[in-house]
Image (cartoon, rainbow, N blue to C red):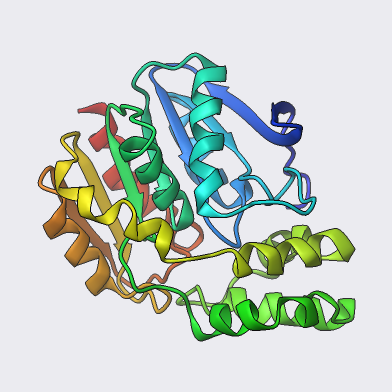
Length: 272
């Protein structure tokens, strides 16, 4: 599990964003959320790369990308994605976003005016209010959390991640999710991205959702306790060109729990 490696680098204003490209066919970009990385999209990447050229990366401050102090908020992630699309020389690719990745692609589409052929949103952070009590607590005490001993940090991240899934997560998968957030840099990066999370970044684009004209597929883990399914149903009502599907017995981490069920909806949607 820990052998997941991104082999390419892009310099975003002096900060390294690591990415990779796999497969052949029409271009599709995959964008992960928090506290995840491209590793958690590996099932979708592997399957979709049989018929599409898949572009994937670790958000700034996440996974194998630069974790140095700086802006890692949703306010900069759409700028990173916009520059990557330019770097990849893509014209109207399709795009898939999970969690914060959904917010990132929506901001890129609506604020940076990047056109996408088709849009897939998986349990996205899209409607205010959002942010768990844990998020709010970290915002107030970021420095204190960043100074906890490593063994406590490991336990905190593990306990937090487990709440995203409906069923227990395999130990090897959990180890790979936790790994980027350990050590001095990883620990600080974990609390930094939480402290910088703000509903202001979704408030900025939420009024524009009815303007989205491209086909949109919204998929939700029915048992998602991080972002309840009611948020997905409300988003569906706001986006005229959207279709909505719920996947039973899966939580917010549906990308790990039910990847094949996701693909059953995503593949025909992209191919149609």
